[in-house]
Image 1 (cartoon, rainbow, N blue to C red):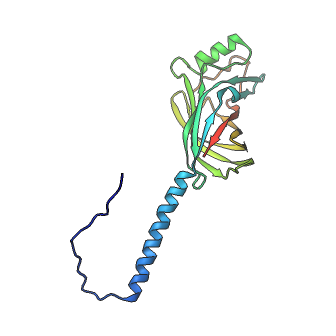
Image 2 (cartoon, rainbow, N blue to C red):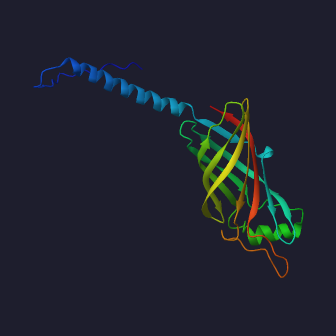
Image 3 (cartoon, one colour):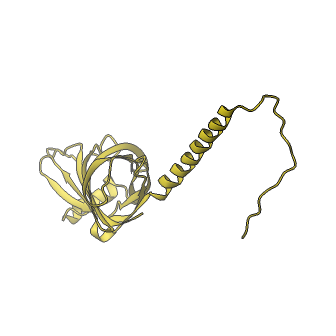
Length: 212
């Protein structure tokens, strides 16, 4: 499609005589506008898109107390983007709330039904909003991801220190954080003399592909 220039017969009258300095002002204003528009499209075009490979990603939890319980949850999906200029992030990582596995069927059933309430809240999610740091085109980078962690349908602000490794179009991101699960609405699994910690440590590993 060919765009024809728009012509107008409308004349604009200005009573002030033209000065040489006006030309410079107009040039500067025009240059600033061009730079602003160019910067916008450069930032938009440089966004990095990450797709998580669920088969290569893991969520590992460790719960201390009278005895230590170690287990895993399955990552069910994950897609997010990063603007390297501003650090802004969009997207979501989703974990299957019914996939908890600590190698004890009885305990895992209670965890799924009583603690996770997976029948009503089938997913645990993390929606990243900002990355503080800079991801290198290759090798290791470190930074912090701030976002919203949703558990039992309630969102909570969460900051996660992350290490990101990029090699070609593949990435691996690892980080650890604590979840105060009792204060965030989950049932305390302690009973009688069996006392459990009120926070659980989570070790996250996300792997997948990155495109620009």
